[in-house]
Image (tube, rainbow, N blue to C red):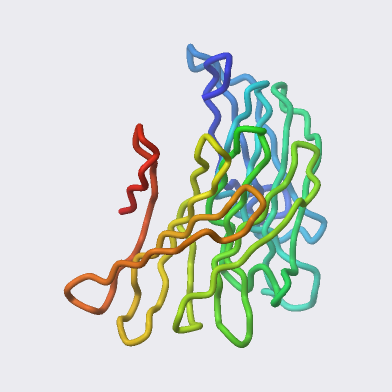
Length: 231
């Protein structure tokens, strides 16, 4: 919901090229459509919006996947973040294809979740590919003008697949990430990762269920005391 009570919805919708675009719609409190905005990157390939957040001024942030430059039907995919003002005017768009270790995302992987911190910086969670460690859980922080402030990655103890599924921000600006992370001999485990506002990892905690096989963290929330609840 926006500060005016408006409802914002984002997803994907086939555009003039036949490929899906980010499509974001705003409705007023009575359900009347106020505006529709589409985002199509220069490559004109499939784009998938996966998360949305609204700031105190009604600015709208939309995150998702966006194809990277290159030949072939699947040239690689990057994390995309787009900001609109409260009237739907596009203010900026950012696409990231590289992290410190490798490409932010490849093939069908997606930007996963999005949250705003108390200073209304945008916190984007995504999947980062490293040839040495498969997939890592990546977090990137942007200011309200779209400048990348920092990025950080979580690589679990088995150095295999670590896929984020949710991100939440506490009142002090600390960032909490839910991750499905392959452990050493435990299969996929729950992992909760806490980062400081500057991106430094403070701690990570893991849960391996009794089946010692497949434990998938899907979402995360904070209770009234800002304890972490992952499911």
